Image 1 (cartoon, rainbow, N blue to C red):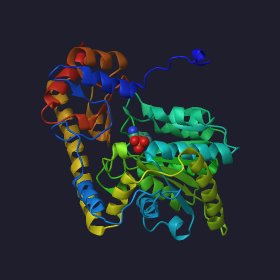
Image 2: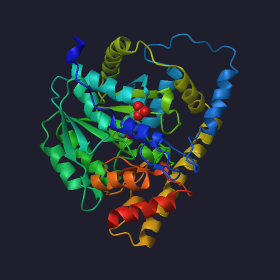
Image 3: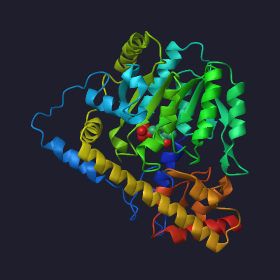
Length: 405
Ligand code: PMP
């Protein structure tokens, strides 16, 4: 009977959000959830999304029929071009199959499920330490044990590249290696392109299987091509790989659950046939899990990606978001340095994307919530999008105080 079901803990992230909403302090600051906010701390509907919505609403032929099992083809094909590059050799050689998923989470899950079933030689997935917390449970839930590779150096507050390389070299052959395509969550630290090249060499030598998680393309730097450079490089090297792609952040479509999973087969004369077989199995898995994916978010994305003018507007919107965040990084660093807050703060501007790993420890993260009503995760991660010109002074002073205590 259900009496044996134990109580599970609340999801820490959504628990924080709830606590923030209940807090009545007028100066409270939410830097926990990874969602873009404008300078007034409000959610931002991208103007290009409003336009696409308008186009969809005025389309007399639109209905609410089921999408195909693999999703809307005009969406998945453009999504693949976006992450792999329109001139990708893999696309030309018909080595890519793409499935529309329940945002990035669904894409990671579908990939994990597929690998659990069809790659029996792969014993473990290696994820960065730290990583997006959901990676652990998604892979565990499909029976793939999770191991870690070092990633964050506490000393430099940068990448522990030697530690990472050593761990990837020592991992058993044919391990799955989970990599954040750009704007690593939670640290905001990415390998340089030269470092990616070294990582690719090790992965190739060890016959590892790269699993890219791309949740921030274009959102990180404002440049879509810069943000998919690692994925493109790995494909150019002829590696077989998969990529989970989310449109939550870069389109501001969080709750609409628009995403895609891409399987890229390695180059071989029979690669197109192999890819077709992979597609057939992904369709079976998709059918048993969700039957077919939701329409609205994918229609919005497809409308934008298939229209040159809307695409250019989207790039403009991406720059609006990324440049505001970069501006907040500069401002926060400057304020902490001005206050003479103990420690170094250059990492705030070195890190990229939605998050900054401040270096505050767990007691400090709890204290700043208690004393200053500033809500960050207990690992000291802040969402840069939660800061704005109205609250950044208050925030910097709160950090200064808690670091000195
Ligand atoms: N991967 C990473 C690293 C993320 O940060 C996120 C968003 N928090 C996701 C995947 C997926 O998010 P979603 O399911 O909302 O697309």
